[in-house]
Image (cartoon, rainbow, N blue to C red; front, side):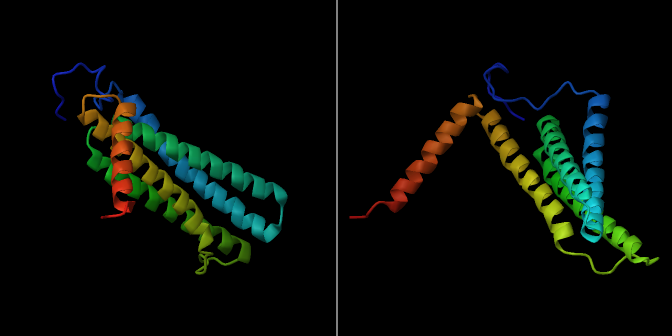
Length: 183
C-alpha cells in the first residue's frame, strides 16, 4: 500500500502487523470455535423446541452470544491484520457459508435423532439457518464497512476521525444540495 512521506503516527492504520503464527492460529481457531458454538446453539434450540425445557433455551442463547462475539472479534482482528482487503472479501462470505452449513447440518442431525430416523431430516425450519447466517452476515458487512473506512482513511495522511468528519460533511453537502429547491 502506498503511503505519502509521513510517519506511521500520522497515518490512521498500518496493516503490516507483528502478528506471529500463534496469533494467526488463535484467530482462526476462534472463528472455528464460533462456528462450533453456532452448531451447539442450533442443537439446543431444536432440542428445546421438542422437549420444551427452559434450560435448553438458555443454553441456546448463551451459545449464540458466544458465537456472535467470537465471530465479530476474530473476524475484525483478522481484517485489521490482513494486508489485502480482497482476502477479507473472501474470508467473510466463507464464514457466513460455514455458519449456515453448520446450522443446517446440525438441525438435520438433531431432528433426525429426535424422530428416531437413521437419516437426516429433510425438512429443517428456515429460521434455524436464517438467524445464525443472518447474524454472521451482519457481522461480515460491519467488518467490510469498518475495515473499508479504516483502509480508506489509511490511504490519506490523517486520522480516522478527521477522515470520517470529511466524509460526513461531504455526504451532508450532497444531501442538502439534492433536497434544496432549484430556482
